[in-house]
Image (cartoon, rainbow, N blue to C red; front, side, top):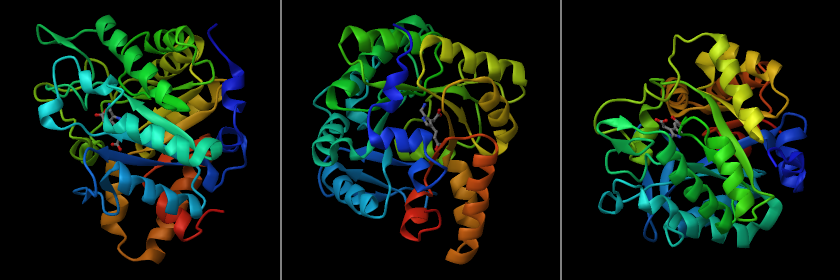
Length: 324
Ligand code: PBG
């Protein structure tokens, strides 16, 4: 079984996220989950975004839900001392991230859509998105670890596991692993078209996931690559069974988003990344000018074909009712 179209129809929250008119319910709010309790650390360069321990996170989500947010994306931030070569912590079912997924699921059930980041970079001691052998990021062994991480998230209660690593063949491998573990209603969101962009700076700070040596250019797409490669990556993931296709970053790649949205048959998401968020927050200090910028940006994503927008602006949009 490669594609299960019912996955995107499984809950009302999923249907509204993917198939409703473009609205507040089309937005996904990212969160950075840290170990401990009562932790609420502002993230450098990302005003309004905090690293939070599970207890604080639950309260934040409760408030967000009251304001109408129905989808979240969780990133687990791993303590330095817990990082290793194999990214062991990333698939440890007792980790704070897994605890967060379980608690959110038990508290909010199917009323919200829980997306979880599946990558190695937050849990490897070298900060790379895959396993490293002889200074190279190896593909297939990394995919094996990604499958273990994805299944562990599904087990904890994730609606969608979100492969952000850009290894070849990971979507079909993850789909297969989910099937084998009987998680037939868990979807795969693929970061299909993800560029080796300079717009991820603040995020890497927030997730503590900067590579210790080298960069991500052997797996993320070259910023000069043409539409052909973007379409190829998107269609490959679609054929491998991805339930949602994502383009990332957003604003510098609106043209790519349009191309991809026109050539796939699955819902399309765009990631309005940390560097884009920081630009807006740094340039528009008062609420009114921010409202205009943020609404114009959301409109541009919608026009370019996005069904879903992952954005750090979601909370402010919800609290001020900028999008109904
Ligand atoms: C992990 C990952 C990254 C982002 C999302 N997932 C960083 C990267 O690829 O280097 C970036 C998100 C953002 O900048 O907001 N691989």
